[in-house]
Image (cartoon, rainbow, N blue to C red):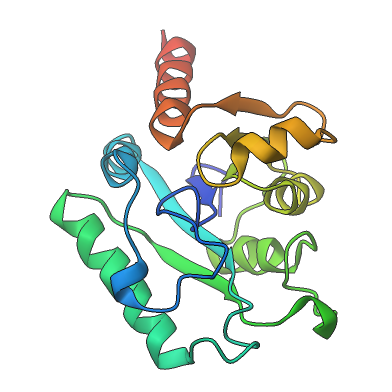
Length: 189
């Protein structure tokens, strides 16, 4: 397949929805951040395929089961569709850090799976948007362009430093989308 697919990879908690140090354990706790779903709709309108890549160690910790995780993601898909947005796929790691799996960010296993599923190379600037260092590290190692949002854990992440080279920082997902869409328009002129 030619590299014509426009893809963006988003973390879930702290980027699309409110984050919680106690984990998002039920559909009721999944609350979208203001403007995030509308930003996804604008990406779709510009031809982007939107993929979510999220660590969900709450499953391994017994805080929620797979059925509940699926219900949370169904709520996210439904809420997105209500504003004209489409999330193409959700990739998640259900493991705890001590499981030492390849899919848990900051390791790039989930990103390799995304590249395989969409038959695309992530090298060359596929945007990855996250609020934590591990989101950006996993994407960067896979060849993605890292974008830090200051929602969720983003402020703390920025203050701690150590961001991958070339990381761009934005207030929220809507601001990242503004930038990406302006960049696309500028390149087509």
